[in-house]
Amino acid sequence: MMKEIDRRKFLFGAGGTAMALPWLEMNAEEPATKKLKEPSLRFASFYSPMGFVRDYFFPEKGNEDFLSMPTLRPLKNVGEKVTMITGLARVNVRGVDVHNQCSSCYLSSANPNADFESAYPMDRTLDHLIADKVSHRTPIRSLELNCNTFKDLRESIYLDNISWYGPEHVATTMKDPRQVYKTLFHTGKSDKDITDLILEDAANFDRKLSRHDKDKMDEYFTSVREIEEQIDKLRKYYAIHERADMKEPDEEPMTRGEYIRMMGKLLVLAFQGDLTHVATMMLAPERWGTPQRFHELNFTKSHHGLTHSQDRDDVKKSLSRVDKFYVELFAEVLEQLDAIKEGDGTLLDHSMITLGSGLGDGKDHTMDELPIIVAGSANGKIKTGRMINCPEKTPLANLWLSQAQLMGTGMEKFADSTGPLEGLLA
Image (cartoon, rainbow, N blue to C red):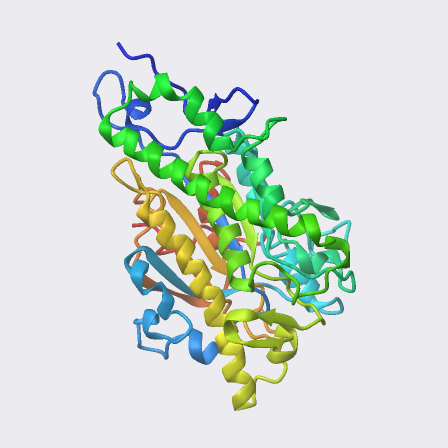
């Protein structure tokens, strides 16, 4: 009988490199029934700053076709696996900076009336509460990614992080794709590419695989090779460009879109290779005074500044282009996950990926009617391809509680939740 291989173990190359295995059927069969085990559920939360232009994001009352909205049209390719949730809100604590609250408290939704060791209602965030329960399944406890390319330190740490171990105890994010790559695929002291080393070590192992599993391994190694090539280009660029002297953003070797795409691809590889089941990704900081270069949109603008002038038609149009740009990049991650077959479905089917913002309206700084999209069915437990219209001011924490329960935490209460989100489950 073929020896079972633990999916949490690595293949090791001669140079000390390590790579986890993607989902393989040979590892997933129940010995007695030969049926495939249910794949592990993955959790990820994407954060887009300062809300979205509401007129282009939320459909009018009575219209359930949210994918027809200009900002959300990029999601159409995976529309059947996406859920829009309206009516969610957070409590805005008056007297403290609203933007600092939006990002730093987004995944904690802490009760604003509780006692905290911070000026903001901060607490241990949802991703770490989930990781506390599921991190034994994977080599990496959780993954915190951040697509902020700014080098200046003019803004606070609260604006640049959604993942916190606890009040004032930030989970430091990774902003450099090379750092993320090294974290996922530790390459030891060898100068060889990781896939070269792994393929050498995997030759005997490969002969035991079915055609299906061989295809899965080839798919995974090809994806890693593509990232390797991009990382190598970055390495060569930085060998002749001093990073500390670089200005934001014109001297970046990647466009804004290329940079976010690479970070998204690394997240996909982490989920595909079973390296982690918990991840967060900030598409941009919550507020930054320095203008941002949006190469693909052919302009350099302050995202924050745009939100405060969106009552002007020309500004509103520019801002909606930024919103759509971020949704397009989010949609690409979903499409990649959905293209990876795993068990009886796809990697997206076995995930729960949320895109949201801590502000409902970037101009008026309201936290009502937060823009929230959830992708993936959580192994068939979430009914997708629809809108869920919650009563006004339904706590965002109700969604977080439901996701925590789906991830198997056994949690019965989260922050200011009033219960699991009604209507979410299939």
